[in-house]
Length: 250
Image: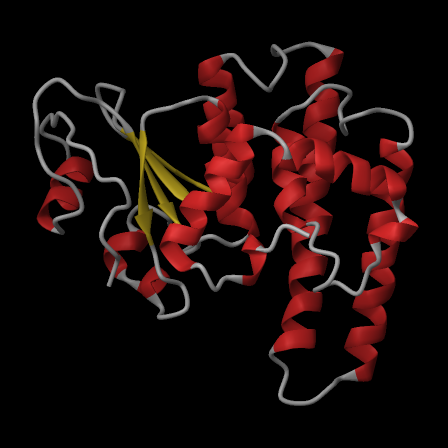
């Protein structure tokens, strides 16, 4: 089942299918005049990146844990919000008709655009640099590093071909990031949603990497770890599932 909300807050309801669905599952309670964002979440690399942005924005939101270790993401009720059956997903109740979104990159772009922070304006070269690195994270960092972790941690026995391939790709990706951070303090120049997306996925111990080999990544990680919003996001993740390996801040 979907777990109880973390730090539950009361919100105002209009008659709308998404709101009625959530109310029917006791995911929220009703109080007039309060609007918020619901974040359907588990503290993995993908879940943490949206949590970081919401904390950076100081947004009013509520975590609704979706225990992917017990298969909660497969529930039909959740899949009506996240068609792909994966976390994270959000429902933005601040709109007259609530908006549900899945896919972490789409969520980061939407929330940053709405707030006018951590994503430069449309049509600017600066925005395209953020998008470039955000899509790099979505298209390369998550798929390859998650598969590496899967084969290292959960395969019944080592599969040398897969491990060799994925270890080599992890090293290549770390070198790409290291080279970029040798040129700029953050991947798109200034701190942005691209950094928030990449940061939770750089987990050196799980990925067979030594940060001593990547001094610019190490310095970047220290800068981001020191941000109060990042500390809050990870603390909330530990409230949900303290044993999740993605929560280790090396």
